[in-house]
Image 1 (tube, rainbow, N blue to C red):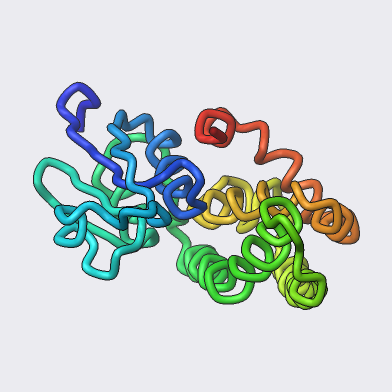
Image 2 (tube, rainbow, N blue to C red):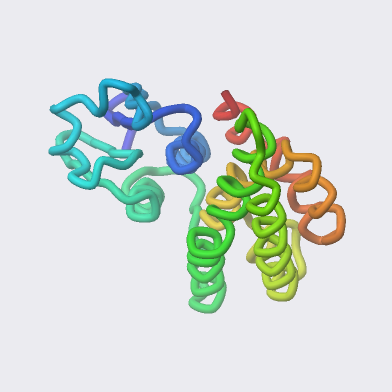
Length: 210
């Protein structure tokens, strides 16, 4: 599909990990899009017309030529399959399964401890809950150890080419690294640290960083 004929809108906030994941996928595919600000933490609440786009009141929501979608993994897979550009999912069944496994691990075992328990408490909170930071770091260590164990040879999480797993992980790691304890913990996992140093220089990661 020609970029000139694309009409894509992402609804969400630049601070959101999951909005950034979608934006990274769009940048990697070379798909232009409009970002409509939706702040889920606004004092006045969500705009009334947003709930039809996402009945659970989360971000992001997505629209392409009248086709509405929510849930980040559904959106990124659609972006990969609906538009021309480099493939963001492996063709090989085992590599694709590994990609899906890593994405599920990130959602279930990394996002809350790395982002909410470590980054938010250490970087954003006025007074950190130290017990929560410590618990988050322990859970993050378990996740990083498990991820390190399943990494295969290659520059990226699933092999020789970057996939949706890499782009799902990057925004979480970006915030985690901002906490001093997060950066120190990453250094304990050389394979993951090397991956992070590579991916954070990609144009899509840089372009969506603010």
